[in-house]
Length: 479
Ligand code: NAD
Image (cartoon, rainbow, N blue to C red; front, side, top):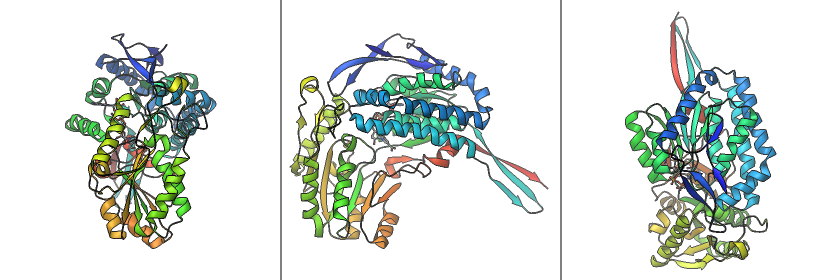
């Protein structure tokens, strides 16, 4: 059985405690590997290794950083199939989907490799009086903590800009999906990344995640995960005056107006509801549909969802894989029960799904659709993070906005209309960090990424990430 070790100072090592946590394959419900059960001693060792490497890394010329990050990207691409299979077995997502995400992980490294070359500082000239220039300097040793839904993609989305900006990193993947982060260590060694520049520690969130966040010398934390965890992290990090970037939960609306291209809206809504089993923070879990086309949309949507095949994630025919863990599987099923209690009318699914052969004990849930739920009920307000969506009719723009903005979250939104003026008006008034018009999950890595309200604080992506991972110092020269 593979033992997932920490990667510290360029070498794989057991946790100091020499103890292990079981790691499950969600599609079989069986333990298939073990994870180092690290504690604060391992975080300290990782910090010391990162600190020792920092002096050289921060002065490594941009071009060299660019070359190294590019090499990591190339090696990820070269190993796409093996990494995708590992991700699929570890997370439960279909392998064909994992292949796309691994490709995107390589793109993250490639994108921030070029950022290392292009990032520049401002200067402000006050004619005849002063010149100010801004130094954007690396911070030192920073912490990156990521969740289980898009494992290597989100891990690299943080690590790549942190390294590009000249920091050394102690990173912690989710204990539920540690495999591809483990494999990344080997890739970094092969790429020639100097020892200690990136350290990867494995283990439980409240144990080593907390040790990372409360470490007095780790100066910034970039976190993606649940809102409750984000709140806790903020309460630990804020009194220590750490830089914090928090990418948290969502309950995203998909607003479908009567004048949209119905076929496209239905097709993309199926994806935005059930891709990755609905376990994407950007999934549109509340589909709000204008009354004039509500019945047409509903019929077409149900027809399309019925076509989604569920089962063994390694079989390319299947569109829906397994739910990531037993705990999450039970949580999603409990929300299906809640929706029924709240008066929801079940239109499709609503139950677990039994796989065949090796997958009989896997944690599968049928794509589930409800209607007839008030927009303020718990099913429509709380993040379920699974293959469960609700359909709700609305009368006009004002009512759509009222419903869309009613949750404590504000991550993303999709608007479907052929009326550009209406699209702009709604985009302006919607309370979310990301708005897609007539599309979903179309990403340009240069754009700011993040949420408002309880969906987070700060932005990732492009220069936003490079600014987060640097400190601005203003230097004023009197002429
Ligand atoms: P989680 O908050 O349980 O865990 C996220 C990470 O935090 C894991 O690595 C975990 O080990 C660690 N952690 C847990 N407790 C900790 C603590 N006390 N201190 C420090 N670290 C700790 O989240 P999850 O269940 O892994 O992921 C699902 C959540 O992530 C959903 O809410 C989803 O919306 C959110 N998410 C948000 C985005 C975004 O970009 N906004 C992207 C993906 C996922």
